[in-house]
Image 1 (cartoon, rainbow, N blue to C red):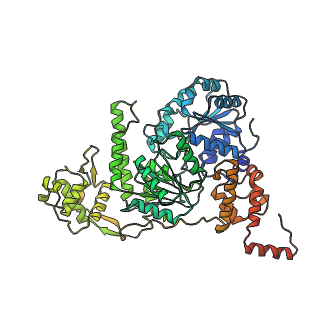
Image 2 (image 1 turned 135 degrees about the horizontal axis):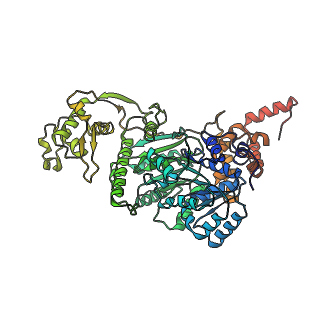
Image 3 (image 1 turned 45 degrees about the horizontal axis):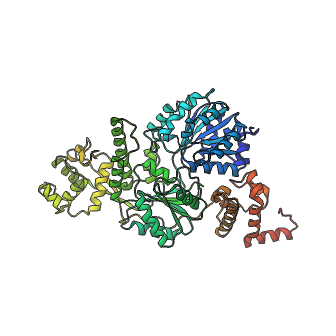
Length: 630
């Protein structure tokens, strides 16, 4: 049974929002007109509402194809808490539960059903789909369909064949948070989208602070960060299972409430640990990249990377799990040179694409090596980090965001032409046979066994930059590589090569000026900025009281706290301090259904914790003969 309301009424009644975010309304209108869509919207931009609201208005069922059980469970819980019926069909259900869910679906109880792509081929599900009107197929995490995407899943290639079997072609709506030009084209082609509306709302998440650090003691840096952010919920990503175990164990020994997640754990342990994090029983999660897709936890205040991911797509997706509520959050990458070697090993030994022929596998490897280089440059650039990310995805900004470690670090412009000439000249005179370290050691005059064995101590440029610190030479080398004055090979033994721009420096006397830090090391913010609302400042004590009530309700109902209300909603409550239902419904995130469930308890909490100033105002109103809503 479909709801006889317009889209804005549904948005307010069930989701608690007064207006649509950028891009949402256009996508919803196109779907309702029967047009295919591709929505590229950053994490936290509200992709799910773009297919959930049309699903409530269209005749027939909406199938949402989703790659992970955790994502489906989270979305269905959120819908049920909002007063909407939804179900998921995946391997976590017993056969009895699965058949019962299908039976209810046939009766029309669920306007929205989440399904794993592997389920599309089963006889039982196909029989259901062929005898049930399907209004829309929404493909979440649509980049999984592309071999050029960072999370290619062969099971996603079955979606088109499934749609072709249906008696009537439904609207097909695809959504993803990150997609390069190649991935966009793949999604459209492979899913066979017909004249789709392409909506890209922009990749920028202004509430996120980006930082890169190269500390000598990575664990010490993490421990210090957590001590500066007590009680905050956050994720610490590690490159390997072994590293997850080491960091998790150390943090536990140091008294932090922390859990862990990686593919080496049993299904049961992963499930328990994930729920401990989601339900805020343990606010810290140490994990590999196996964790996070589809986790809609809105109050993650930071994401720390205990090592560099293999590409910017993965980094931005993982970092984007912070601050989904729109409040300030921090994304800090702790870089070490060993990270490059670890990721190169992963690329060369990738077993995920065995179904591809040898030529295609090598093509994929070349793509992955290039992505790794661009990820590495992110760790070295002195330009705005946000702008670097946006440019990678094809957007262009101002190169100054005032909310990243580079924009908040003091730089000075330095003429490095002499250093650049020596580095490029050394590459040319050694006939482009050596890697970055050998070139830097040569111009710096290092007396190592490798330099002597290669006879680079006889090179014309040997020792010409002996007075320049090695870390400065590395900055110049990275600048030359980033701006195509030099390049590196893709083979096993990476060597530095000349480019067309090299000659301009050596022979045409081109001047090279770059930004260099005045400080030895950019410093991370020591404390996340406290929440700020649009109309005032937050009473932190009141906010914590509201959080405590939310936790009490969440435990009673056995749901994650953020599903009751997000941190952002509690922030607005503590600013606006509503006194009755009418005022409470003006708070972003409070809809009619949730007010009926929780509104009076939160109003009571607000009344009990009024500030002295507010109480004084009310006494004055009462003495003047005014009335007060209760």
